[in-house]
Length: 102
Image (spheres, one colour):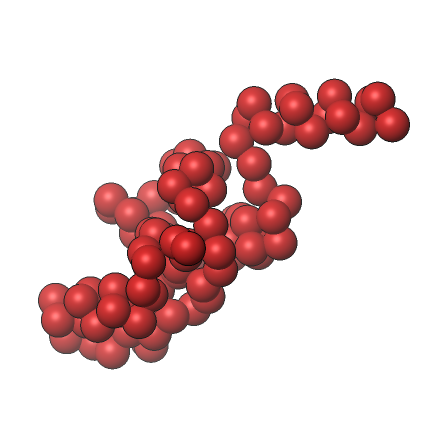
């Protein structure tokens, strides 16, 4: 199963949000190109749809590529995604119509 991960420098700063089969291996690969130590801020099961939803949701908080500013919005979106509460727009429509039927 693939995992969504958030990786950050130990000293803080931008957060990398990505997807990997082996988060530990991905951390080691990223570490080779960073002079400061990195750590896994969080990791949870999720596929490319969730990763794309996170990236789209955080587009206004993008620093560069898959790196996002460390702020309340970014951390909040990560928590929502981890709890399964962040969806793509059409998934919101499907969820809302299910709620109306109940």
